[in-house]
Length: 199
Image (cartoon, rainbow, N blue to C red; front, side, top):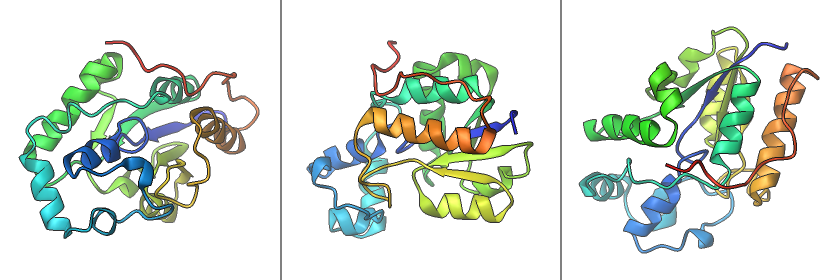
């Protein structure tokens, strides 16, 4: 399969949600326990309380930092298929607009193309031709694959691939998994984990 539609998650893949949330709670993200996805367990507060604090932080979503590897991952995906940003906003309406603004700031070409989808039900995208989801949430990968798509779990300290820490190693994992899915026609060299797009 040389033609793919690649759905690329934002938070935890190209936008540093964990770092932004950790800053609000005075938590060192480097201390995040390996393999623990539940932020309530990590921050020691109820999930409603956590989301209340995040949603009171005006501009939270639009001011999230891009990861150092973000542009390398985006470029890799765009070289190997139609790439669509797929992200789940919170229940706060501001989250939706701020995510769009984040995308416009960091990847204006993707924003102008309208190559993005916002909503929690990512499995509904699995019917696209050659559908591949790259996401840090294992539950999203499971539901996407159950719906007939192909998934690539993006390595992060809160999932089963927590041992893949280096930016280049994360890039290499995605590149190699894409090669397995798409075939030898994949393009993607030795870049990865470099500087994010300047804005």
